[in-house]
Image (cartoon, rainbow, N blue to C red):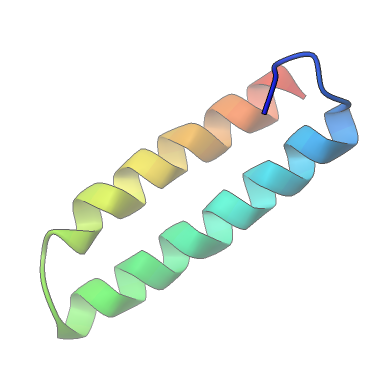
Amino acid sequence: MRWDESPRLLMIASVASAVLGAAFVLAAIRDHAGYNVGAALLALLGALFAYRA
């Protein structure tokens, strides 16, 4: 994905990464605490996508 994409596509990517991050958090409740690291990174990526949009 390039940074000069349309704002609509960047917002879709932001929402998708937020949903995936929430899934990681829910998986971390049952399985492994390492999923929280992935969720945190996806949250930062989602915020970056939203900022660029």
